[in-house]
Length: 286
Image (cartoon, rainbow, N blue to C red; front, side, top):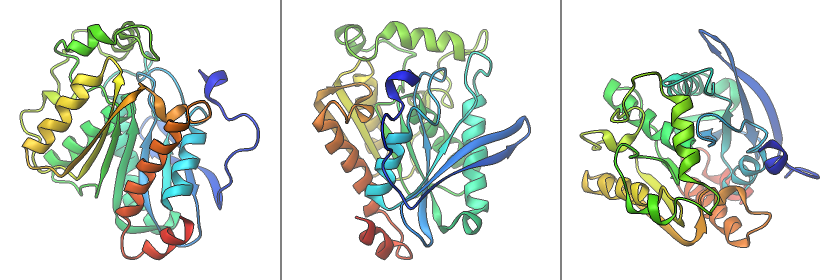
């Protein structure tokens, strides 16, 4: 995966890209800060996909650079603990630690104080959707926005897209099941709302949400169902269903022109949510 996804040639230029760490009880968590401009910028926590097993900061470096440059946001990409060494809820715990750290250290990292948005793809999107639920349930500060690209949300039940798109595209259902076998502790069921957000009995009170789903994705139907349940619960939702793409399209912009357009759409959603403090900087970057 690293050989396929790591940047080849010169990376997308930004004002700065800096590696930092988040203190944690089990050691320090690597965090890469993508800064497109000087000054206090709105900040978003980014979590990469890979079934909680694969990928890292480097595999998603190009995507983070492109989102940061287009949006004008400070993007904080977290290298959370992965399975099989670290099983559920390790990724969620790390995401919560990073979220709290970004809130507490906004001034030190050059972020404004309007809150920390959530941006994730695939299993990273799943973890962030669960983080939003956890923050709501704990009465913690809520993110101003969450952006979830092709998340796994309801594998505790069967969906037609599991059969229709379960093999032959970029994501096979067999890999999803293998990932769960690595990530789940022995005896842990799938109907855990902090593992799969569709299992939550109530989705009310969550931040405005942008959900991307792809037609040629075994996770298509559960992603659609999640967007529909959010809307039914009164959450402000924009659902973008991409009829000509597969799972993982955000990583394919070097090969698929439409993928680049969709990355820009994601970044523009961030830019449109920028706080008044940072809006002039964001416009200048765009």
